[in-house]
Image 1 (cartoon, one colour):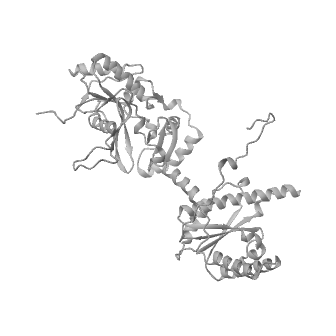
Image 2 (tube, helix red, strand yellow):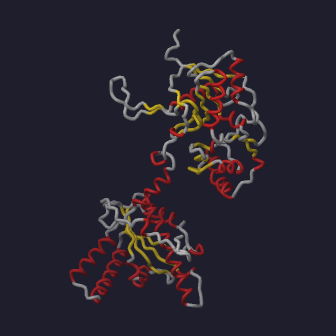
Image 3 (tube, helix red, strand yellow):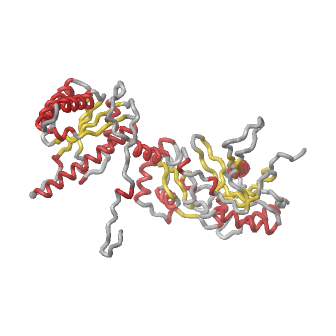
Length: 476
């Protein structure tokens, strides 16, 4: 039978247990000889990262690790979630090892999804407790898998005088799919991706977006032979795959840029989008009831805002459209009319203002009043410190207001922050029968938007950062 268009995947058994300092290229040479094999041009050798890690001494023992406060915090977060999923919980010392090997923690759920220092997104920073001898030992990913692959390729090329490629592989989980597959973490001699754009399909159409992750496909094919348990086949020879030799290949091109990745860091991308896209909504709302529970969920998030002395001085009042709210707005408009008359404003101006206020504050599906509760503000004998303490309270509830607005945006609710209550504090307290210590500070109109608000202009960064000059005249 012709072997044309066929690929052979050959597992190399008889690989000994690897110790630090072992020469992997010699181990592979010995295994080939035992199988009565020699290398041919175009062969690809896939090596489990555990062999590389062990030979490089990339092993840690958990008994040598002291968990940090961050590790203990993550343990408290993921431990109950892991139990609910019926999977083993992580030792805080293992979590610390994961932190040490990570550039960033992407998600902390029942597992830890991290970005390694190489840029790989995977569970537990690629740290593995399987296939490693020694109580409490774990293997870490190689520091530079490309460099390891290149070293092995050069030695084997010199021994066999053949052009080959090396892939260092590991097994990663995938977004939206169950089960780990083989992936490449280091390469030498073969490009990680195969760009098919510009080629024609069976029907003559030009391929527009087809890019194959060829080394991951090869690593997955090898994993079927390697296995994940006691197979003891950490090296696989792949023969018959047609690829273009690239002496300068690295794994880097296969790592998707963060700005183009729809899965990685999605929560942070979403937060960035919310921060940039939130607008003050001053138009008519959709005629749709807003569930009061949604507002309470947003206030629940708002209570996590920073506050002076952790005083949490904010108090929220949720007002749906009813008689009391109508009475409040009417009384506030009466006061507004008198204030504007005292300011000698025209009747047309006054009428326009009152109509606009009524529309804003009464027609909105939900009106939220934010108050500063002064009862927990610290008391001082002098006026200056008392005033400063009051300002601390105002800053604190302003932080909560920002959290509240962002939480509303996350619920796809539009809102606007108005300071009208500052001009009718006593009236509002009287009508709503608020405690004496409450100071009405802001209204938030809330509802579902009918329009898209155009982004307002923002000052350039250089115009809002003031550079302080040192005594020498230099800017700091």
